[in-house]
Image (cartoon, rainbow, N blue to C red; front, side, top):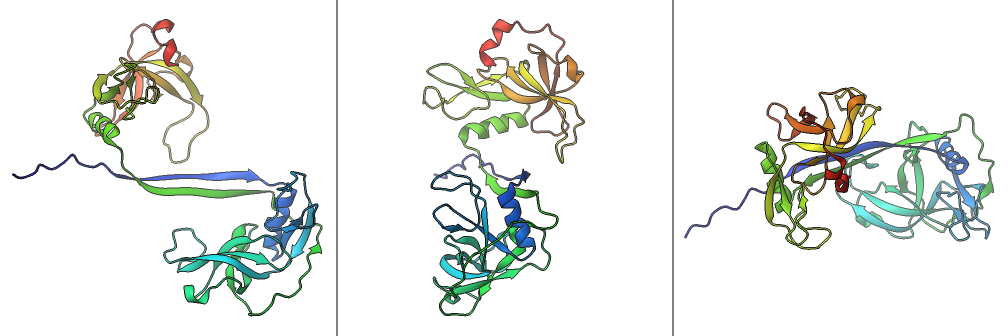
Length: 321
């Protein structure tokens, strides 16, 4: 007997990307500005240890520490791992070793890349030196990587006090964060997504508490039992709460201000997210009755607009806020 093909497994590439912006305190500012000037700074703790990279508080006593010292640009590999297939944005575009390097004069190790021809050329205890980037801006990438140095015992480098003062110090950084992955929804969300492509919204009901989850999760987080009974909800619903967005998001072609709301679709046991359109932002309110608006060829509602019905009574949705 010929077997039948199973349901299509849904997959989609997803990228989560955002710039992480932070200001720098005096210790981190001095460290990054020092890298720009080809100077590696650490910080000395109350018990005399030198930490590189420096931190602002003693990890043992939690006391604030600002006693900056300069350490060497050479050091010793304490441990390592070979990276045969570098990813986008990593320090080198060819195979390299991730290494922990204890710089001369430091008591802790710094993580960075080591440019080596192969794993046989790397070993714990090997001597390495900093390869500075040709253009430096005040970031950890000012150290382009480490490279093999002269073998032999480390010289008795003593950390020297440093004021941490530089011309035009770095006071903040923007670090891009990005995660590329392939998302594959499970049984419950696959059914939900497939229903949306037919302009239907389908949730799943818990057999114990009877709550209808939209989007479905495959199990009830309250009762801990699987949810298999599918229930079509909506299409209309009620705004339970909302916020007015005044900051334009990058790559999002929506003019501000606009409203993003929690919407309890009729028959659902909890609210989902959706943008509200077709009404001035300052007229959106709790209890507003709305319906989905689908774009041409869209697989999910583009936004929700008022239905023209009277507002829902608070008692009918207060448990869904």
